[in-house]
Amino acid sequence: MTTRLLNRAAVSTAGAMLVLASGLIPAHARTPQSAPTWTVVGGWGSAGGDSQVWSVASPSSTTAFAAGSLCDMGCVTATLEVQQWHGATWSAITPPAGLTNPAAILGVLVTASSAQNAWVYPDLYQRTGSTSKFWTDALLWNGTKWTVTTFPQNSYVYTAVAFSRTNAWAFGTSGRTNAPFNSRYNGTAWKRVRLPGVPQVLSAVSASDMWAIGPTAKTATKPLLKQSDVVMHWTGSTWRTLALPAISKPAKDAVTPAAIVAFSPRDVWASFSIVTPSDSSTGLLEHWDGARWQRVRIPYPVYQVTSMAQDGQGGLWLVAQTNGNGTRAFYHLRDGSWSQQSMPAVTGGIIGSAGLSWVPGTKSLWASAIEEDTMGGNQGLILKYGS
Image 1 (cartoon, rainbow, N blue to C red):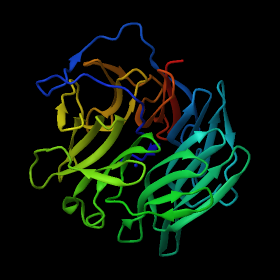
Image 2 (cartoon, rainbow, N blue to C red):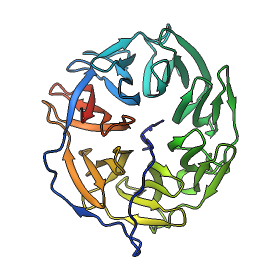
Image 3 (cartoon, rainbow, N blue to C red):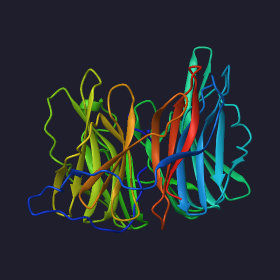
Image 4 (cartoon, one colour):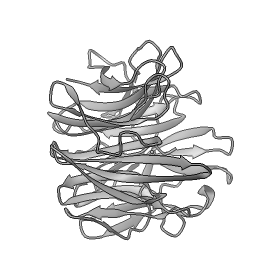
């Protein structure tokens, strides 16, 4: 499944982590031993342009998809860029006709269940004179060709997941009032579905066990401070709700969901941001054990958690913004111990990592990233941890 950074990847598996009777999960920092590191393995764009890798999805060890925008030096119009990993190399997939030169691409999501079932959701923007519009398209790649569904004007997909060719979900809002726009694909068409809220972050253990956080349907159209978030759990037949963790904050500050990772109904991790009126932020991590939420201390600077994913061995990877200048780092929690890894070193310095994607059945992960180059432009990068 894929989730946009909010501020537009949550992934899942089965596993368990030890919760002590005290209610706190130990947070001891450790020095990494000869472990794999995060490296640059792909990407696109040239110096001085404005290219970005927005999202990566990995349904298996031999298949992955990366999506974003390509706009080289003298960038005027962005091009949708989609690439597929075949187990050894990345290769580009030509976008559908009519989407190679939209007026602007504001973001792109990708999610996949196999090499023959990948969904790409580009946020498109166009301005004609004094009139502007934006919308999201749902693009289905079956391994050889595209099928395009155009969602309503002013639609915005926050997060999505694909389980099979007959079962995919997209969650977001539409219209100028940001009304809920939650939809499900049945193999033929998208159908609107009713949920308790609008999922902004999502994690799926399976097609019958999904977890999400977002504003309630009744408050989704209200200003941020007047929204009421709720945790939603899909059981395969119905959406149930449970309360958010108790987070103390000043009245003028807002709490927003950042990411969620579910291992089972009794093992769910969620990160939140406390955002002040001056746009400063503090990142928090909470754990659900099936009965209650417990705060987990992160022993490193956390301005904001931007993405989380499981590590394939019962632990968590986090991408955290460490300060208000956009600096990011990878944090790893396993067996109660934390470690930290910096972003890979490149000429201009990576300024952001948008999403993590665990490679099923392995200890490896993909990450989308952005490099600020020496000419003041952005280039999109694909990172990988492990073999």
